[in-house]
Image (cartoon, rainbow, N blue to C red; front, top):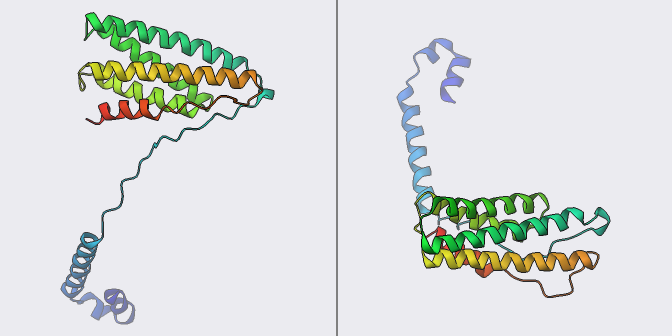
Length: 193
């Protein structure tokens, strides 16, 4: 600011302006800012995709054909994933079986996302992520991984059954909603181990 004032009022003086004082002031301000920043408490970690059990909102006037097809296809995908788990019992690193499990959850995730079925999407996404890490060798296949995949399959089947009930009752769920947070937590613990 001092340089600009000097240039504006007396260009000759501005050309001979001693910039070292300004540099010193700026350096001091930066040091104070850095010290202030270090003195601040750390910001709390923000969970970007925190799980919250949520019953889907269905509008029966939109028709239920696409949801019926989603349920049928998803149950088929879950059966393929389950069959692939059986292959892994005898051949733990079978790339085809690992790839199938990954793809089945990937497909369900995409469809659930399109249909705004958040709980199914999140469970599928986390399981897909875990299986991608297994495929790439970042996580070893283990009993815990297999149990987590089985827990995801079981949770999804229960959510599919509840979704079917909702469709049959014009969007109303009469049964208690199934909370898949324990399945999601099991998968996330493996991912972040």
